[in-house]
Image (tube, rainbow over all chains, first blue to last red; front, side):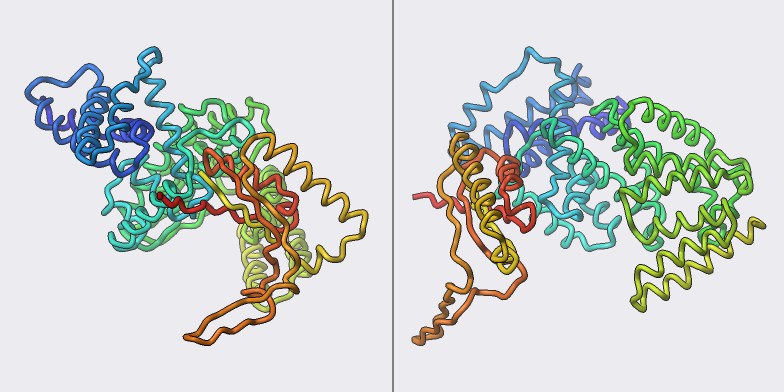
Length: 377
Length: 118
């Protein structure tokens, strides 16, 4: 049997098996230890006996047996007995694994954990990145990252964070939290200038993969579709946004022939699908729509700035931040002339008067004026 | 699992409530305690505290006992009451915390109570 086939199976099945083991064993660490033991045995026996029909089920059974041995040794008999009888054979096996993966995602992204911990735990357990990879991606030592993970797992246990998918009342809010974590992973790869370029590119791809999987699990959630669309549209520019010297190239200066048409088409289609869900568009759909307007303009001059301005009006209701306000002012400047954009900035300025903000306002004014002039408005 | 829900609010603002507002506030707590947590069977204990002007903080330094007027820390929001609830999960406890009237203007800290095995 080819080694890479085994590696591929291990890569796709590991998070699902881990998710199920955590539920059945009710213990992150015991689940991890027994999963690693089962993987070791798989690597030994599959090349000889062949790959089982359901690798995930095989790994789960073997891992559970290992866990039972551990529990017996530690004389926690009642839990071991409970595990032996635990079974849900009436249900479709894929459903069981998928439900558990959802539980794992919502537990890792529980708002009672700090954001850093949510991200680290998600990458380590849902994506199955190694400790070294996660540490490298976030520019911290392995020891620091390990401590972060240990603390997070301890809090899950001690505070009683449940291993469940939230009920319908809390689901929209909690899903938005999950999407935020996924987007932060993407941004860590997309925006950061420091660190290993390769691992940053990989982080973007991993975030897209995670979001694809989440969409398969939650189905028909407009904001989840919106986030996937946003990531694809931003990622479509990844080769054009850095020059040969590794410096960032502004959107209007990019060679648009380098943009990934496939990703743009898919991103735009996903956005249309999200709008069909007839849920009021949330922040990820709005940002996706802004990215789509840019991506579908053949030249910078062909950009529909009125549309972008309207989308920023909508986004401002969710994210009233200086960045969003500045971008809205730029859009107004591009649509109605630099004076109109500057006027909006003046209004922003009038409402705040501390020194640092006036400095950033001065910079903002230059940005609006320059961009508008370049377009010849 | 047992959780303590610590209720913090701005005492100065709370003391400015009119009699009518006080009554409405009491009604909301009564409804939460009697109709919600007691009926759900999760209530173990819960009380409002008198204001921090009645508080005394005790420190012992060697053999010397110091009694200091006022609360442990000067903060914008003060501990004003608590509930102890026996919940299945943190999410359940967080759900109740959001229904405590003070969560609307102050904050509620949810802490798991350490389990002491005899």
